[in-house]
Length: 424
Ligand code: CA
Image 1 (cartoon, rainbow, N blue to C red):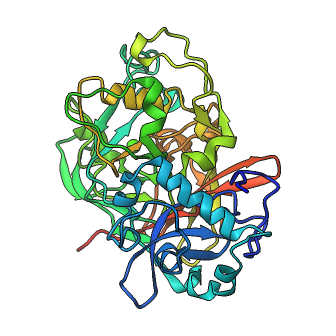
Image 2 (cartoon, rainbow, N blue to C red):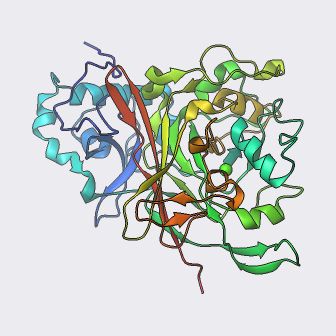
């Protein structure tokens, strides 16, 4: 009997605490290895345990699903994703059947030590090889806040903003999986009254974003019609698009973000599938300016994902500094993808498109320090009594994302990284 893997009533025999991001209703995809073995395998997750899909496959768990040999032991899961949603959906469905309380897969459960591994005994890799990374600028509140601070408070939005999901091409080489650290970047900084100087950025900032992973490649010249856009998205991750505001502010005219953005970005390790997110589908803000037909969408096209940002000083406790929600975004992912490909730009499996900073309507929902501290005129208080206007050396920034409905809670796992002093 096939059950619905999103059924709120489903329970697993594998332990998972009520506050885990990974109950049986989630079953995301990632890439892991056992600590000490640099042998990556495609993985999923339940509670505090990593599911080794390669070992499960060796036990015959995926019989009846058309999978190439060694598909779970590649250096990334691009090949697995490229098999298409009917296949990855069947894998997730089978995992649900294996892990559910009344599972018929009794032998697999009896041999669970071969394929269920405590998270602390594993290492997480970047799950996908990202060919191209695109960053949008889709939060009305964020664009308004930044326009107010960088340009003109009386007219913060540029004329194109409500007609085009504005974006730019980022750099994929410096995207790292959660848990990494990076050095404070150097660059050109422009004092208010004087020529530019060279030095370490004094204004390292986070950007609270959600990214989507492309699940279906297209050919050059092809468009992705907006009605088909969801089918091209494999799943979502949390994304911290680290920024150096002082470098950015001086360099961004006229071509936009460059060295203030491309020194580091952090991605959460588990790709939560569009299928798992389906129960949390939600509507976004009303778009008050008519869009061209290729950008018209109907029905709810976003997801209710509560987003939190924490700053953890070296040796200290994390303090929450921001609470936002994915559904605050003005432009939805379907519009972003339809716009991205309207000129025939080809997309490849594993490409990452990020939302841009997700700020909400209230000051505590602003998704960057620049906004939370309003250009340095305010500061954020941390639990240890210290204050921040930007990210300091030794600070770890942690993003978390949570969906809740009908007694089910799923999440993404931490998206965390630490700022180190500038290299001498
Ligand atoms: Ca960004």
